[in-house]
Length: 237
Image 1: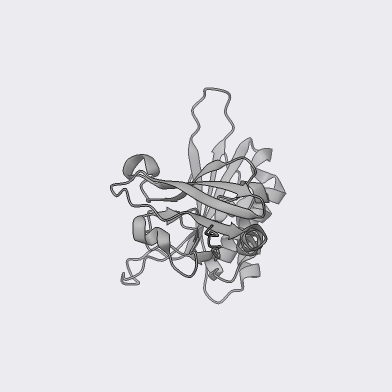
Image 2 (image 1 turned 90 degrees about the vertical axis):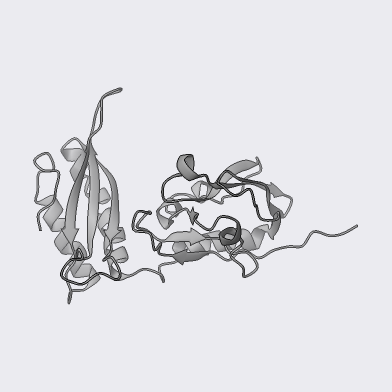
């Protein structure tokens, strides 16, 4: 009887080239040293690292005793538009199994099924969730600013909800005089009752050269906390 091969999962952070995509780095799951997802779903992006900040069981490729269908990659325009790549993830003894792939895009190609040692699998998920080595300064500023604003309770004080904080990168290949400077976008919305429409708002903040990450976070936190978020939808410099 043939024993199924055990693969090695190695998660990698990659900042998408597409500015329409999630600005945070995607966490791609190369297997056995090959990006098999790129081969069958080249336009697909893996879940960004912002989905990895919660508890272990909420991470996109988390494995449970009950089989679960998980989206592995989707295009920047959403799965409903151009299709996505799905896999069923389940535990089987001391192994994690990826099987029953489904490609809802233009191509029907799917990877082979994979088996991972559960200890190696869980260790790699934990390592990737804690990995900060890929971050550029603007990413670190955005991450720490989000934590500072969430801890402050400032938006709740004004009847608002902090939706997200994300880095805003310079667009590559454009002359400096027409490209937008790097910064951080703070998204929030007003608390509404059931069935009421929610309107999104945004603070547009700018990072400056020659200052440390810590100085930037302190400055931007103070800038937001000095403002009444009920008064404006756009942030001033």
